[in-house]
Image 1 (tube, helix red, strand yellow):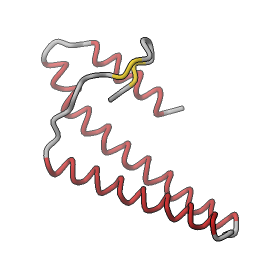
Image 2 (image 1 turned 180 degrees about the vertical axis):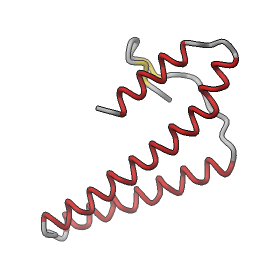
Image 3 (image 1 turned 45 degrees about the vertical axis):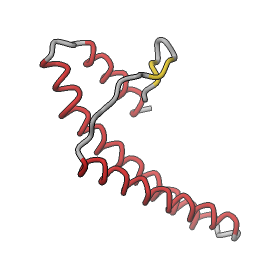
Length: 103
């Protein structure tokens, strides 16, 4: 669900994902979850700051990669289908989403 910036509400729209897309996204999230647990363990074990920062950078990179894949899938499916159906407001939604991602 996506929070609407103007109304501060979560979208009730859904996305029917192909099984391979769902599996890929979930695998990426599970790897990220494992990396975050590794960060927690490093802090718990008093790891040296540059080592923690290196791991944190890897987590950040993995999240960015997840977002790129999800965004590409969104543009190819949801956005394209909405534009074909005449729902031009989807372009404004995409622009808002891109602005949030590029903060």
